[in-house]
Image (cartoon, rainbow, N blue to C red; front, side, top):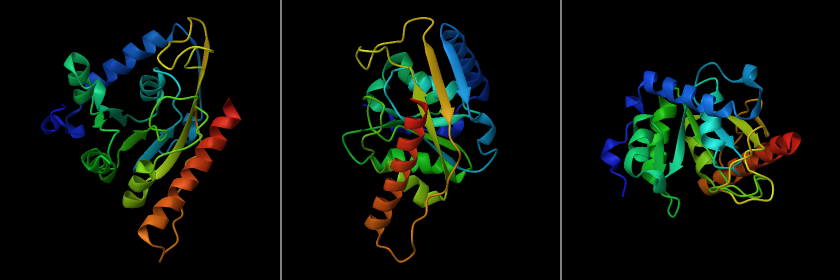
Length: 215
């Protein structure tokens, strides 16, 4: 069980995060990587990154090349031993995917209220990466904080025909494409659950179309 008392994204060391990003970028030199859309990334203010998820490299890859440091919601199963301690020191947020993890959402909201960036894989787990369905956590965060949403397409991070935990072969081409930021439009006077449904639908549509344009 993750010791949530240790969780405070604000304690993440800029030096440690920078060193980790450089290490990840060193590994990524094994691949032919293209990063698109960085110029349109919001320079300030709260941002929720929503990315498709098909390969184990997706999280480290987006974190390493994003124009601003994101705090990702990461499945709590990874928070064990040295890896778990490193994730906490990097300000990443453990989330229990079997429940509506209110503590994880509260931690993510704290980051956004401070004008930071939160990363979410709204599909909930690694799949084909085509964004067939999304969960509601990202939409809830956006409605609560007014954050802008940036869709992210990760392409080529999973070896063709292999399992979700496989790595691409060295020399494979990978693409990370940051889309144009957008705001969720939720009509006033609509009940909370319906507003959440509508916001989730908007995020789903934007992300699915963005990924399809780059696959």
